[in-house]
Image (cartoon, rainbow, N blue to C red; front, side, top):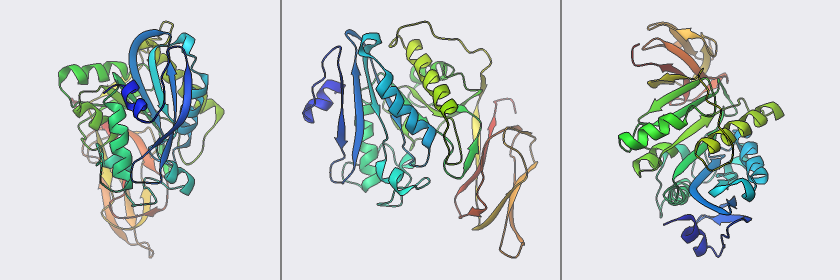
Amino acid sequence: MNFKEFFDVLGVQIDAGKKVSGYVPVPGTPVEMPFTIISGSRPGKQILVTGGVHGGEYPCIETAIRLARQLDPAEIMGTVVVIHPVNPPAFFAKLQYFGPYDGKNLNRVFPGKALGSVSERIAYTVSQLQQCSDFYIDLHGGDIHEALVPFVIYSKLGGDEVAEQSRKLSAFPGFPWVVGSVSENGSIGGAASAGVPGFLAELGMCGRWSEEEVEQYVEAIRNTLKALEVLEGTPIQHKEVTYLDSMQVVTAAHQGCWYPAKALGEVVKAGEKLGEIRDFFGEVLSTYTAEKEGTLLYLVTSLAIVEGDPLCAVGVDGGR
């Protein structure tokens, strides 16, 4: 299936040199995902851009909205489809991580299920669009309770060719860090497993957004589209990008109060304390340390923590 066949079913016509907007209904749910199709007058690659898989990540949602408005068919070769946002119910509920209908994290249920819960059906619909694409870009950012440094995650799944294309293109946003992932149930893992290269970008944090962040994000994705030869112009080659082999995500073993011991972006050594969870009486319930030396890429900023929640993530390279 390609974009034209997918949208033909919805009664949406894709014409070269035109832009069209509307809503993709998620079958069996009340969810409708706003979309914009920018179809160039010249043939080229088919690119899917999504923002707002998580409803509280505002810079990426505004970036997707703005990209959809700004991209001009006259400057496009091929077709770009932007979903902005993917998860409207979570957006309006102002929820971190989870969807209001089923309490599931949408970015943990890919490739989804056609007859599953609401989040699984959203993921399944996005997966159908992924499979129409030559490249997939998923825009994220620090959720309502998360601080992070800008970084990009690419999937190592899908075979050497898919992984290498994903890795190479991940440098073009110009974010300081690029991290490999072997997760299968996230958006890019699901896409890569289906043979579609892509990456997940992270910018912004803590339930805020600014013009400066959105402008940086828009330019980062425009530069990537130039590298994909979908957008006219010569892409900037960002030589200062550092590749990391993997990311150690630390999760909470207890419910309680979270007290980080390290600062965002700090280099930590193996065995160093990352933080601890205490109860309401100040007693330590659990302590967390770095498995390997690396850089603290994101950090949960909320005092409240539930068992199983992420606490922080350390990006490490293969030699550490």
